[in-house]
Image 1 (spheres, rainbow, N blue to C red):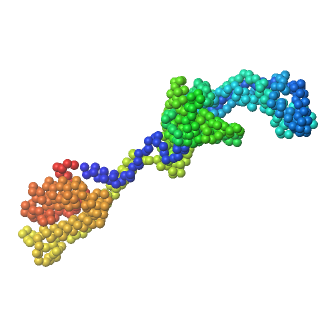
Image 2 (cartoon, rainbow, N blue to C red):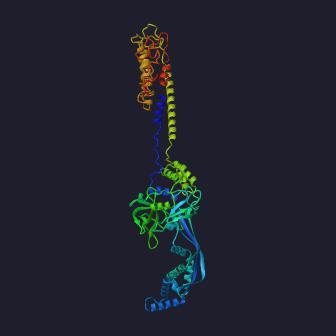
Image 3 (spheres, helix red, strand yellow):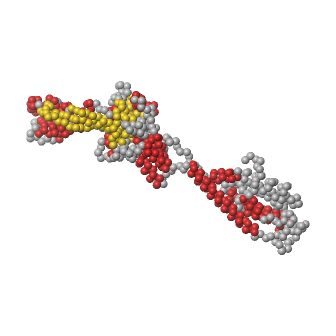
Length: 630
């Protein structure tokens, strides 16, 4: 019982305060919402592309001479009326403007037909909704109407033909040096004509998702992975939704879906996606192009189209290429998908006017295909690792990041986090909490060290005490029946004592030699080098010389009746005739002296003082039964 209690006290002193329990894995660390949200959602947000390939055929054009001659006559009359200047440049400019306004009147199709292989497409944003490869994006990100498709091919494939045809018509204006304005007017004539007479043949469509290769990292190793169109709705202002499937996928990172009721007017919304101002700019690296951008802004209002489709208006900035991107609440759940924004006359997106398809419509469309959003260990472990990373628990985050890398080798960001965590650990920035076992081992080590020091200190003090006792002078035992001399006149053998006036028990062994001085107050009682206030009193075992806990004290040094010795206590079972007062072992003749030390029996020498000292100091005795509750 004494050892167990002492160990408990020592552990309480030695163990430092244990760290508080870690936050729950999904609780946001003390970082900005945008930082936390972007890190968690970026792996699931992917750049998507749609591509059309085909053969573009356009006829050669020829000038309708009859119609052109009538136009020249009109020009002459206009000059004569003073409506246009009479210089050749002004006349040519007027003629090109009239032809461009009605190209089919002044130009006719002829042979040979000209053809060119062309490819057009666009970039959008999509996001994984299931770990096995289902992706959500916008309907207008996967298909284009006929009119818009023709315009795309015309812009891509006909530029060369338009320049050639404009050069020929300008050459017919003999003696006129064409300036930039004349060239643009001439090209506009053939942009209109060639687009109107263009034919598309062998048209093919393909969809793809841009993914990084095994090893992780959004870099130049990324490549398009084919995707299958599973479902498509109506483009804006309809239910602008499309569902893609990329085969051969597993353990993909995903983002969770929220509810329409998660947000309301005034809440902050976050849009993730790939703005075209980056993806279509040649001077940005591919790595830069493949990292989504996060914008934020307030929820302005809920709108409804004339066909009854709900949309959210937000001030979060968006641009071409952001279409199909997820829109998040501050809790990191998808509450909608970016679809449209107001565009100015020069084609620039207008901020503060972005429109979001609510998540309720997305859930409706997924339900029609029996697709259930889900997440795997990849997402769970990654989010836990991110929380550790942001709390500076770098050592704790490493095994989780490595688990993510093993589950999904194509993960675009985990390799960078592993590298950053290792560097932080090497720089001494890790603040990971120590496991409980480590604290226990540390406490046990401190306890063992304290015990060793205490034992060594006791041994050293015992040796010093014995050396002091061995230097004390011996005394001559008085003969039987003699009156013992007083303690203040007791002398070593061979010296003449003075007249005795006091009792032998009180002086020789009571107050002076063994009562108050030798074992009482100085060496083992309250002295600075004993076991009193200096060593154990202030150190952790109590406030009395050996403590005040009732189950560890002795009478001289405490008050526990079950562990005391006769000189320093009152236990009956362990007293000896010479040093105690137990009736079954004591000596009736001498009995207990006034200070617990009777005179020795006739013919017996004084027992060595070292034995009783060891019994007190080291506790080498068997305690009596303890009648009290422990």
